[in-house]
Image (cartoon, rainbow, N blue to C red; front, side):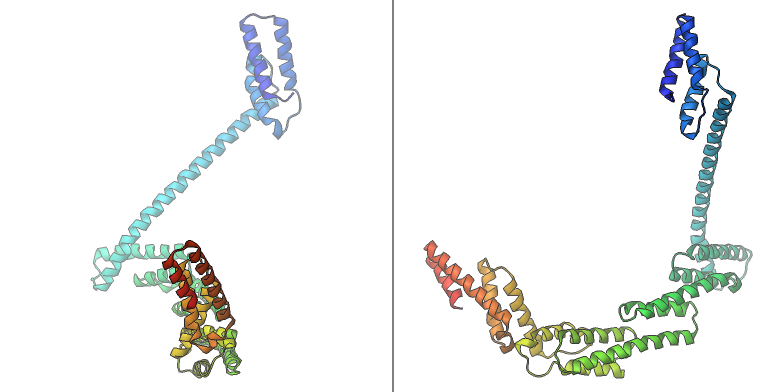
Length: 394
């Protein structure tokens, strides 16, 4: 039936039956049934049944086909070999890890000691040669270990190896790998310099440390300039058009910061022209339609490196305060007073006074003030009525 548990139960019953001198014919029939179950063809999916049946055969007084006995014996050997191999492999790995830890600890002591000996000009006494050899071995090991940890880590390891006298021949492969990695990183940084300018300076420094040729470094700088100059020139022209576009002034401010981050001097022609255009748009009279532009100009002025006129800053602050106040609930006395104060300050500036935001804030303040007056009258509290009327009049 292929049921291993049933075979084990049958074998147990036969064993007990013989012990109790049960009907011998019945027991022989049971043994025959057991043997018959072992006469079939078996595959891998049947192997648990085969092993358990063979193990129970002696109790059932059944004869096991020779091939099944061989199968079970060989399978047992395979499992033992597999277990032994895995155990030895685990032990070897554990030993390697212990040796690695011991070497790391020793290297942390050897390399600084050798570096100090070189620093103080210690004569080449006997022990110096021994420690030098060990320090070089440790340094080379660190170079090999850090090869996949990052370019800067690899360059640091190479520098350390040189400091303890490792020859350039032994470092050639690592040096080449570091240069390749630095070149690749610089290429990527240059390609995305407008979006991620902060990464370029670091990529250039690493490439320079890795030994990149000056002509290649110059080519990278030229590629950066080829992207920045047209973008900055176009952004400057867009602002100079006088459209007072919030997007245009924000783009120009951000690009000036990008250019400076990428190494353009504050006195360069492109940066000076951009800042002049930015500052020029902060002059003159502003209307309610210009308020989004004014707010963006104030927001990006630091990026552009432009000093803001005080009246422009005040206009942007008042505009934002009115908009923010109008968006907040005014369900408490304090919130209503803040809304009224923002409206009052905004009305002092013609551009803000004429804006839709102020009209909305004022309408909200008036409606809330009327609600509070009505609530105060209902409460019959004279002080509340007076306070509510004061706010309403304001």
